[in-house]
Amino acid sequence: METHAPVGYTATQRWIHWLTAVIVIALLAAAIAMNNVAPGPLMNNLYVLHWSLGVTVFPLVLIRLAIRLRRPAPALPEEMPGWQRFAAHANHALLYAILLVNPVLGYLTKSAFGGPVTFFWIVDFPPAIAKNEALFERLSTVHVIIGFVMIAAIAAHVGAALYHGIIRRDGVFSRMTTGAGPLA
Image (cartoon, rainbow, N blue to C red; front, side, top):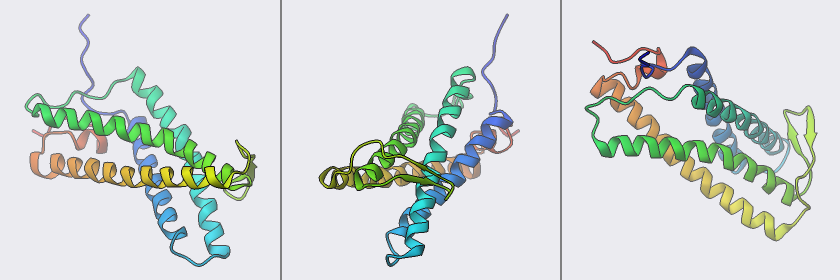
């Protein structure tokens, strides 16, 4: 029995991809905003939103990876240059790593700062580690740096998607939007 690589992503894969994208955009917007407003209720609410979205994105990424293990990504076009294939795979791996590591790092950062991580104003997750100001400063710096790396990786991902969707029209973009393969 001959098996073929999938042409596009399933509806579930596409739905989780776009849900993750919306959550990450909101998470980044909250991060930028919370660092640019005066201390007070708005800042506190932005922090809670940021923490909540970080807690939410982590299991979504685990689900995405579990699905991907069962149903690998569609093959890239044969005519795609090797360096582009490498860049695509490397950037996907980087995005997955960041989306797994940075929420955990954020949770540890908040724990080192002191107090629980509040999830959508409903439940408080207890600190994972004891309050430690020096550790908080180090973890916070790494968390922010990884956040900037994530922004760069997202920009590369979106840029490549648009290149394939608008210029190349080779089906790479459409397999995550409609689930279809290459355009005729």
